[in-house]
Image 1 (spheres, one colour):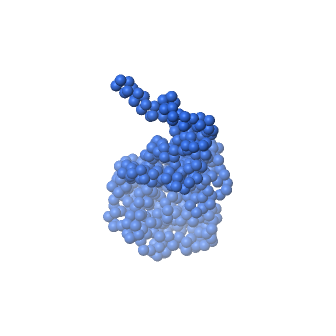
Image 2 (spheres, helix red, strand yellow):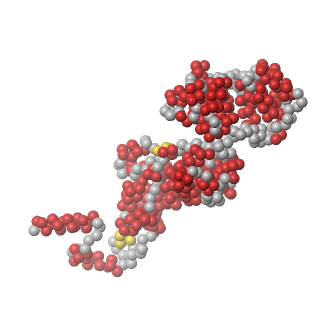
Image 3 (spheres, helix red, strand yellow):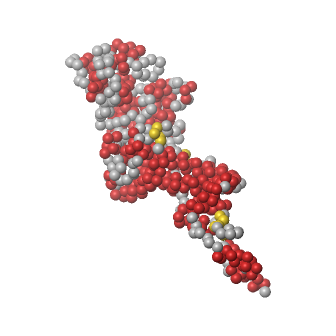
Length: 508
């Protein structure tokens, strides 16, 4: 009757959806034709055999490019699920140790010691982030091999990541061990984006380009990457069982099997990767304590905006506000960001900004130009209310002094000789004639940048070396009368550190 027919139709529909049915429901003639298959040998499912079958014919690989790419690169892709944890780990390290840990301390401290040093309530977060970083490193590090055009040292390439590894191997930078985490992160981001591009191409072929275009314009920043944004999948627990159960059938004639590659690729695409965004890498390099970070020093700043000293009362107010190296380091990060943007304003076509630019308040520049709504990271009301763009060099020097135990700690001993008899008195007497607000930052930068390696002749005249420094404008120090006339001619380069300390003490 009608009701029974409806039930039969519903049962047939459900059986088809579930891909299961009673053999007795088939017509007898069809059952007889399929009978030999009952006695045919069907080998157990093998992911390797599945991949080999896909790779045998070029037209199959071309038709199912995403599936072929996934199966070929699965060994590389499995580390990408840990990319959010990698970014979280570097973020934690930067917040806790940037500018507060020198290079030697980072090499002596193990990762386990760094985690154990955190407050009890934060250690689980550190453990979880490091576990992801460790997994990504140990899965992918030996595939990296190079940093740009630089071949990584053999001892670096063979390093296994563990809690006993020196912390310096986790701090991204452009030199020494710092190239290791930076190279790893760049490699992982490249692999992520290459695979996402393959997903894009597959979706485009499937005529879903409108949907994907919206998603691709919203590529996620590495600073905001979450586990949901990662290339993640469950090969053994989900995808391989799906292939074995839904994408394999007996061959139409004889033994063997046939594979449904289209169904496999569709599963891979829509269950795992259709909404995976590309990643825009935004990563700050780690700055060790007592090491200059600004490329080119502060010379480009002086060329772009005329600099002036901070008033003494403003300096005192800043010192009252900024009482710890950690506060000074946070303020320094914001300051160097502002300097970096300011020095690139106008590109190479604008050599110097108008004088009025120097009168702009720092907090106003941060809000209106850098669009930083929250300027509390400056950590000082005096900095926020009294510092103008013409004071940035002076502020940089002041904060450097608050974050550094000794800015000249790494300077070679050959440049630390005591002053000759009577030279200290000469410098103190001539200090009022020297523009110390201009000279001291230049002199300090020269010492830190040039006298650590020991390659400069200590017997050379300091005046000949320092005279080439650029205070901004169209002249070098040697061209300025106050320097040319009053800097002692017989002061050697080996006395520069001592000379700086005398002049620093004489600054009013």
